[in-house]
Image 1 (cartoon, one colour):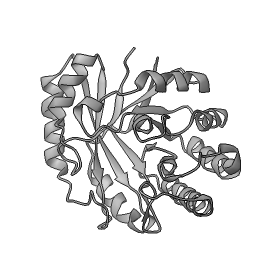
Image 2 (cartoon, one colour):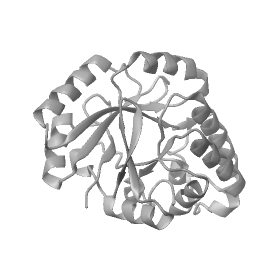
Image 3 (spheres, helix red, strand yellow):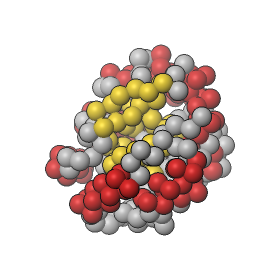
Image 4 (cartoon, one colour):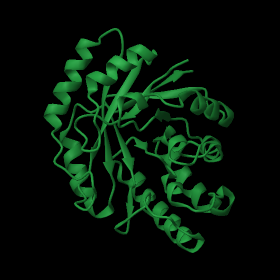
Length: 262
């Protein structure tokens, strides 16, 4: 069974070599009924993906492909913001003007000016990073800018040792409760299977905690930057969701969520 892929980067992202039309063709081939193209919105000048985002051209291409593939694959317009607390007001202003977005992913790639995914961190560095990371995530959730929290525990890519959920239970519970309370979604990001972890973001244990706190909105995304990455490891993600107690996936239209059973 194939369901949606709600995290794809195409020609409007600096780090992708795919096109939206290519994704649509491949989705038809795989039997994926719905995709969301979520281009990077990065206002932080030190980020490698920093570039001016052409919103109007992006929407025009989404609308063109939606018509071209009507009845075969639904194409949604999304954005992945790179959240920095000091840029929050700028992000809010932009997003408020973009009225044709279907949903917004909020992701954290930097904390205190340092990348959370490109460093090999020992145990002493990890404790500081995780504490600061989740403080920033609380600000992200409280901001109201986004609909979905992207790759919730992506910092695991930087850890030398395995992430021990029980060790950080108090901070995890606080953030997960906040996400559930705000009726936001958590993304199940399958890119971890191909980033040396052989696992999803977040871990299955974190998903179960989210469910226990009343969280009900979940999306699945491959975080693809190349066409062949579309819907990768989706079967494994669905299995993890079922184990955590979920039997519905969340879709968005006009930034309004609705649930679909799987």
